[in-house]
Amino acid sequence: MSKAVDFSAYQTTLAVKDACLCLHTQRAARVLARRFDEAMRRVGLTSGQFSLLNGLNRPQAPTLGAVADLLAMDRTTVTANLKPLERRGLLTLSVDGADRRIRRASLTDAGRALLGEATVIWRREHGVLEEELEGAAPRLREDLRKVA
Image 1 (cartoon, rainbow, N blue to C red):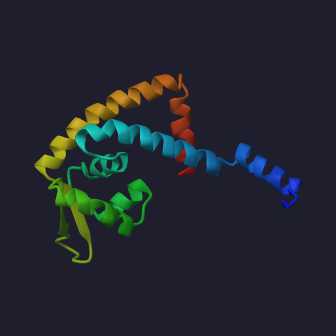
Image 2 (tube, one colour):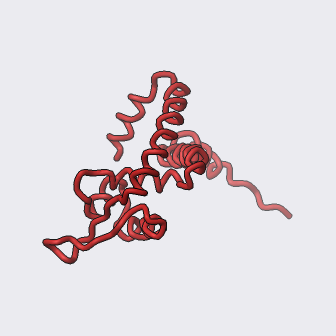
């Protein structure tokens, strides 16, 4: 025998499905990540790895905390995600000269070269996405910055 459906609870589910900013943002983020993962596959990166490498592309080696802040991640997650890139020789991790508790990450020559290849792919894919958004991208970026 089937259980009766609580329609008031179901109405709440429908309201959340239609209105929840968190749900819609998560769905959009997953779709975008899959799209850029597919594009970056040609150079052996994921979209997240591209973001990490890009976050290291600075005149001075950033601290892991600075990279974590940029990507809105915690430091332990950043560290775990840097390890495979370090094993591939794309970056080096070092201890800060002034404070041995602080670690810094910097791109190697191989990392900079791969980031250059990946950036060409990103520019192309991002350009297509901007066209698909038909002028809405600047407002979307502005609104997402407000949330972040």
